[in-house]
Amino acid sequence: MDAELQALWTTATAHGVRIVEDPSPPDHARFIGLFEGHTITLFPNAAPPFGRWFTIAHLYGHMVQMSAPTARVRRSNELVFRLGETLDADDVQLIYDHEREAAELGRRLIAQAHPVSRDLDLRYSRFFHADFHYLVNVIETKESGPPVFDRYYKREPIPRDPILPDARPLLNLKTTTPSTERIVVV
Ligand SMILES: [Zn+2]
Image 1 (tube, rainbow, N blue to C red):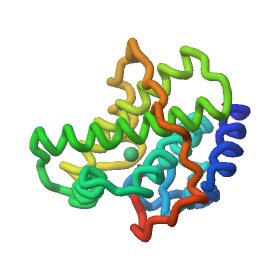
Image 2 (image 1 turned 120 degrees about the vertical axis):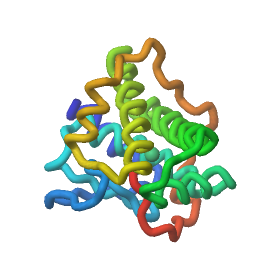
Image 3 (image 1 turned 135 degrees about the vertical axis):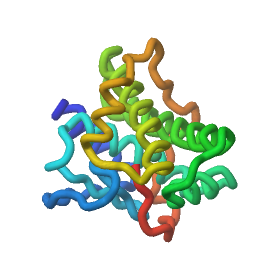
Image 4 (image 1 turned 45 degrees about the vertical axis):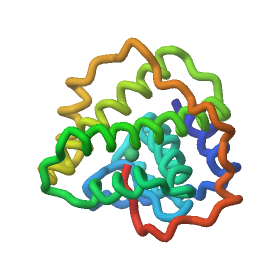
C-alpha cells in the first residue's frame, strides 16, 4: 500500500493539491484528514496507509466539486455542518450523490496514479460506503471517532461492483481558485 500511497500523493500534487501531515492526534470529528482550500492535512497517527490513500482521493474529489459549486454541493456542505438533526430521505440521497461523485472523481485520480487490482478497487468501494453510512450517523447523532467508524466498517460487506472513475478529464486545481470555505471534512 505504501507504493500506491506514494504514487497517488505524487499525482495529487501534480494536480494542484498540497498535502501536509500533522503528527498530533486529530481533535476533529473525523479522524483521517481534512482540507482547506487546496491543502489536505493527513493524520498519519490516526490512519494506516490505506486510509490516507483513500482520503487523498476523496478530498481531491471534494476539491473539484468546490471549484464549481452547484446547488447540490452547497446544500450538501450545509447539511454536513448542521450536526444533530435528523435527515429526511431527500437529504440522505443528496449527500449520497455528492459523496459518490467525490468518490468517482477520486477514483479518476487513482486511475491516473497507478494500476488498481480488483481487490483494491472493491476495498475502495467498501470503505466509501462505510464512510458514507458513518457520515450520515455523525450528522444525525454527532457521534464520531475511530471506534464508531470501525463499527460501520465491520458491518459493510465487500461490494460486488467497484466505483467507476468519473468520465470527465482530470481537473488540475492549479487552474482554479481555492475555495474560501474553511474546512470540509471527509
Ligand atoms: Zn466526503
